[in-house]
Image (cartoon, rainbow, N blue to C red; front, side, top):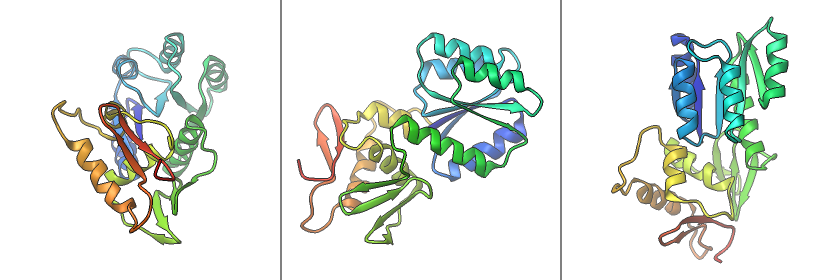
Length: 225
């Protein structure tokens, strides 16, 4: 899953960026409103964490412009304790949640995870994939109660496909949602990631979990359809 963090504090950029990446997210960071709006316009993020007080363009203006453009990305506002009017205004303009500064990283993480579940209509953090269970709250994959080790990238791919179980996922969507960096169009990095994850999910004599739709993308299902 990919998050845009728009915040002018270098300290928060470093701390939150590091924490989110460690928690299995791909992260883009913008230090001012102009860059934040530009990134939000050209990319498809799962969640945008948006500070209200930004140089260049303030957070409420960015929020208003994104909603005017029809962007339905989930947006979490960061606000100061005393800006009640700004919080109300933000919610009225289409923000999905807010968090006051200073905040605990664990609470920010929990709110981001909740917004992602809401985006993909997955209220339960536990997702059943055949005999496997994906726990999006603690970022684990288990088989009959036993955790299966995954690399951070493998888990990011797993979760992105699990919340969209039964829906075709294109290569471009995978590239945009689980990688920080731009992918060379001729690269086989997505195919390689799919192959590694497929090996973890294939059980002897069991159904195929990830299906390739040649020229279209990939599909995660519970059976061998």
